[in-house]
Amino acid sequence: MNIDKVCIHGEWSSRLGFILAATGSAVGLGNIWKFPYMAGEYGGGAFVIIYLVCVALMGLPVMMAEVLLGKRGRCSPINTMRTLAEEVGASKLWQFLGWAGVIAGFLILSYYSVIAGWTLAYIPEVASGTFSAVTTMPETEVMGFVGSIFNNLTGNPLALIFWHTVFIVVTLIMLLGGVQGGLERAVRFMMPALFLLLLVLVGYAMSTPKFMEGVHFMFNVDFHKFFYPKGDQFSGDGLLAAMGQAFFSLSLGMGAIMVYGAYLPKHASIIQTTAVVVVADTLVAILAGLIIFPIVFSNGLEANAGVGLVFKTLPIAFGQMPFGSLVGALFFLLLALAAWSSAISLLEPAIAWLVETGKFTRFSATISSAVAVWLVGFATVFSFNLLADFKPLFDKTLFEQIDYLTSNIMLPLGGLLIAVFVAWMMKRQIITEELELSTDSFGFQLLQFLLRYVTPLGVTLVFLNAIGVFS
Ligand code: PHE
Image 1 (cartoon, rainbow, N blue to C red):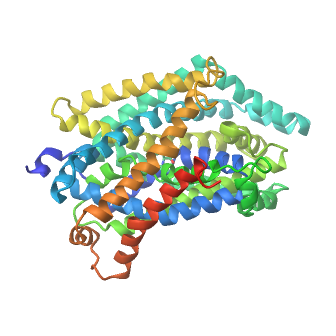
Image 2 (tube, rainbow, N blue to C red; image 1 turned 30 degrees about the vertical axis):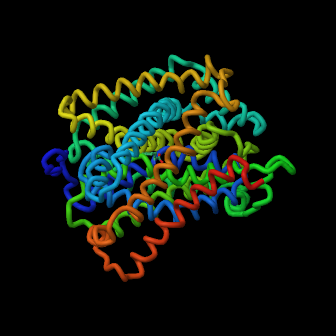
Image 3 (cartoon, rainbow, N blue to C red; image 1 turned 90 degrees about the vertical axis):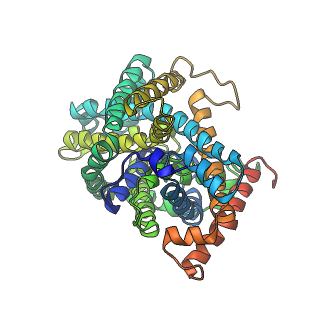
């Protein structure tokens, strides 16, 4: 079968187009919303260090492997895995990796959109100057004030549904633009702008009285506290969460990066492009932490405030700084844009596959999958209000369960299988050809070692640790 014929969805205009899109996919709520609150929840330094180690030893190699698969297969992850498994004579079952990815993308987007909706809701809230009130109230009341605004939003299902709907509709419009029209153009201006604004906010954080305390929290490593958060009872949760966060933040393990790799021009270098994406993504997460924790400590907030952390800290900064309403509105707008460029990559594997079945046009594929995700999103909407006490399994709300299942289990497992497929099933010759490396080069040897042993063993050990095998 000539796969090129079946699978053409378009191509990035250049290597830069791919870098922008992949960075757009990686940088999003994961960096600015999730990374800080997870780091806060798991005590700071140890979480950050383990996260960074996972990014370097698993994230970077798996990203290279995932792009390589896409670039060679040139289809949706499902068909890419099917044709590549055929090419190397492996079992047909490998296409389930593609299926699992499509499902993970669906589930992630269903809650991602609701959280991105919070970001949208904060644009008018901040722009209207609500938060400038923090300058005139006694310090002890600030925390309660920002908290109540956040709780009023999340406690209101209709408001959440409204913003979730807005987010999905715009995602849909961007997806309809296709590879070059919608995706590439959106990211080109947004990424540098977001980065600049983060630097401005780091400047603000440096002016707060407890900047160094925030830095210390992020980089002071205490493994004992990390593994024994409740006195002498061992817990592998933090380790699993840090690894899951590395895969989540880099958009790995579910086919988003694979399908973007499928749109890569044939001659583009995988190694350099992935390195740029990984560095940019990591930098944004670290900057977000450097902004948020100083604000936490300077205002007597709790680092383990959970999912609301960003929404309870940054508005204080916007309330206090000159032109804060403007800067704040711009910030939440850029964050929403960053979320959109991630959201489109979460749905792209499903859309590409639907189109390849021949039964859907890009239009009908996009509409159907967006409607499905929108409906599943209601589970998350209600997890913060009507169903806040509905915790059917492991004492977690529906939102927490979807998040746990996808980030902590599906993505690392997907990453493990991607690593195994590339390093154990594919011929060296194919890998080196796609990577433009020679078989005896140090780069290839190192990558092969990381993919063959470090990633599969690492993921397995963290899983076993989390279920308490080593305690
Ligand atoms: N990496 C994105 C973020 O950090 C989320 C994402 C996960 C996107 C998985 C695609 C695939 O916000």
